[in-house]
Image (cartoon, rainbow, N blue to C red; front, side, top):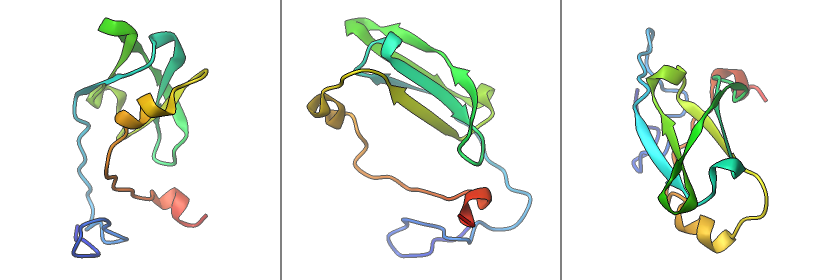
Length: 108
């Protein structure tokens, strides 16, 4: 793999050569919504929902999302049902993001 630019924001199409080795890492995230409002899905390489990932309750009425290699994916969707507070949600959004397009989406 090689970076397309000096800021390291994208690898473009320069992902290296086969075989590709990726590893799902275990991680837990606490989101500021109750478990009954949060729906998490493990996605396939084209962004399609493959399987539901259960959430657990956390102190303060929040939900815990636990991801890891058991879901056999690198991509997840988190959906929050019902009204939300933009101010509260914005506190938890990442400041930077790196996006990659799987081959099945590159032609769209």
